[in-house]
Image 1 (cartoon, rainbow, N blue to C red):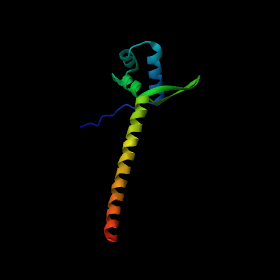
Image 2 (tube, one colour; image 1 turned 60 degrees about the vertical axis):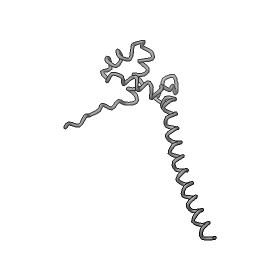
Image 3 (spheres, one colour; image 1 turned 90 degrees about the horizontal axis):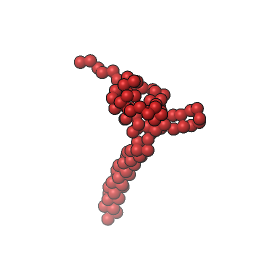
Image 4 (cartoon, rainbow, N blue to C red; image 1 turned 30 degrees about the horizontal axis):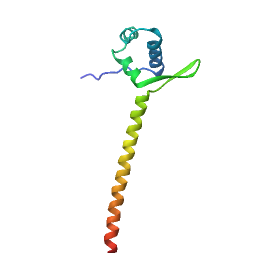
Amino acid sequence: MRDKKYRVFTEEFRREALELLKSSGKSMKQLEQELGITPGLVGKWRVRYQVVTKSPTETSLAPSDSEAAKSEIARLKRELMEVTEEREILKKVVNIFSRKSA
């Protein structure tokens, strides 16, 4: 079996593709064909990223609001698991010490 080599696109390429999509008035399908990329990829980029203007000449990509919310939810779930484990450990410790003193 051959290993598939996936193309990796730079942040600059993704940013420019999203700016072209916004400014050119072309459909995603047309833009993807012109850029020679996989169908649906620009749509995925549009969901994942938003173009942020730092200055009149400088822009960058940032996670979209939905992606930022997803990462915050994942962080909170990890924190909840950790706190739950700590609470269970403390319950066991209290149980052990309460038996010894009785």
